[in-house]
Length: 467
Image 1 (tube, one colour):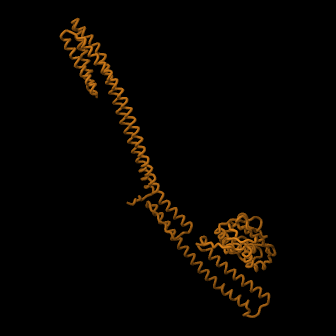
Image 2 (tube, rainbow, N blue to C red; image 1 turned 120 degrees about the horizontal axis):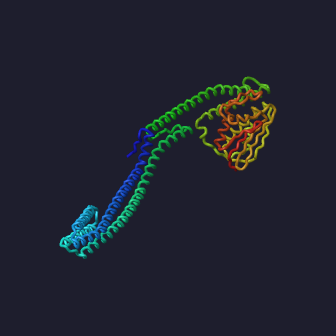
Image 3 (tube, rainbow, N blue to C red; image 1 turned 90 degrees about the vertical axis):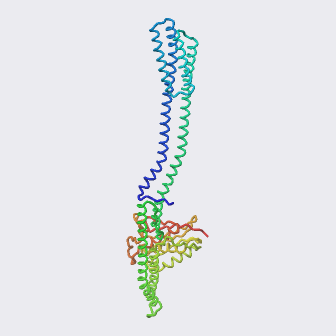
């Protein structure tokens, strides 16, 4: 049987609180009633025992006076003494009647009846103008026995009250042992019911934040939380649409850019081959620069497309063994024309080691750092490139003599499309993507990239395995 959530989260919270408190309240009520019952019984028992004891003492106190009055009335034959004796008998009979109405045990009631019979026998003999000493002695003995028995009743009632108190305490402990697990079970159940939709909402938000847009957001719970889950799912679908529109836009832009770029590359190839006539050495050099830059432009377009893909960060990392000198030489060769055009001298310091990493990602990192240094270094200056392995880490560092990055822009410089001041004399307008793409690759490889102070200084530290 499936649990049906209430319409409101707060109603579910209130129901959970009520059901959690209910067994505790029931246990408290039961203990209160038990204590109240024990209190009532103890009060009644103490009251009855006190009245029995008081009645027994009254009888014990009347008997000597009654015997003396009986003797005097018989010996002196005085009417006033006779009247006093009758009055004492009435008082004695009232006490007997009063005690018979009390909750006496069988033995006490038997003693009381015997005392009444003995007193009646003593009175009969007194009317015959004679007093039997043994009769009053037996009556006094019965009175003492009743007094002792009343004291025993008080002791017995005290023991019974103690026993009832212990039983009430044991019952309260038993109720506590039963009620607490039930309350904890109810709390645990409603904690799960409350935490489940919240966990589903949290998972949905996490999927949206990590761009896992193909997983529907489903929330099971109160109606208001279900509606919140539906809004999150609507947001997920909207983000999917935006991602699709962005991908379509990038495809269209790439197509529009590649068409003129293809014509540019083919034209430079035709000029380089001499199809349109022979070229002078200087013209041939210019055509080569155009050709190299068209290739570079194509690479930038491809990097732009890769940067715009939602799955870029989750792209598969291809770990291979790569020789650092060869990798650096390949990057330097791609940048040779740009370095020569700005008359920049490159000084490289590369460890002759082989490491296991993703060579394509490391190439993109070095290529972007070296390209950035070339753009910002003054004409005719020196750019330094270091690639060393230190403690299972590959340290890449590129320095130039440019003004460097201001401290306020150390974080922004890695943002997509952020462009700082254009270097003096530069004919190339930066796209603002190079360092952003560089940081994406560094992060994907589990490394860090930092910016130095005072000059162009970028350092990348990547975890590698030395072969």
